[in-house]
Image (cartoon, rainbow, N blue to C red):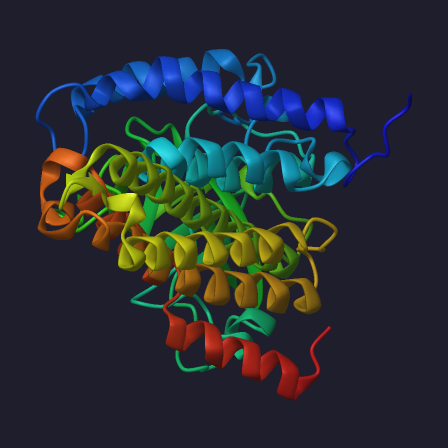
Length: 393
């Protein structure tokens, strides 16, 4: 019997993506948590990411690698929809939110290059996205025009000099894998947006690791400064105005982070259910205690609501302000209820929940960082209001 397609893919394809993610999590990710490591043995991370590229889970602009089309946010996203990427991210995040964030950041930057369908001056494998400046992504006015003060214009500029561009400026909170080959940089070109592929080894680039962080420690986060960096004219990725690429980058970022948050909450729930069935108190398993039942039931209800919200986005467009508003709303809502779900699950462990032994404090740290990453709740609310007020399409 023929199955109805879902967001461009059939039921068999969905099962394939789920199985792929679960096998990757089981074989590649679980081993890093053997031993006493608060965030897993991150010395094994290079091998894990290598496996992600080999299995096609990690997207890349390099057409010779398996993930170019069908990896997380790969080239087939526009054709198949966002469900495959959401499934992969969510299932991987059940085991480790930080690794999921690595794959997500790699995928968003790759997607911008793949969607542009332009011949690149060189073909990178690992890429990072340079969009955010200071502590917030751009507000609505700045998205519409990078020269608008809303509240601050884009200060990273690209000036054409003959057959080259000169890039100056700084990008904050650039999430990526270690060992990236290039940055996808969104900058101001006169009064419009421009998108550029910049070799990570170009002269004039300064990279500073932001240092110790609360959560998502498997993912690199940098401050990247461009001091008179000269790149060829062919390195410009857009067709003259990259505003739609800015919207795409923001929408994919928020949607993917919501999927990671959902996965972290699901992992927390599974751990709480397992622990409550094994732990005895007062002569009975604690899963029989009314307070524990209420905590787990509340978490499960929150997860169901988050999942329904996330997958309602599967037909959304990420090149319009309407789609951007949906993505911002999804991150705002989903991260709030997933954070609450993780907290409820942690409480089933009592004081043990805050110890590294059970992995619950890691999930709490990860979801807390994710909640404010690439746009705090205050920023998202302001953007949602402004899009509605201006009637931006």
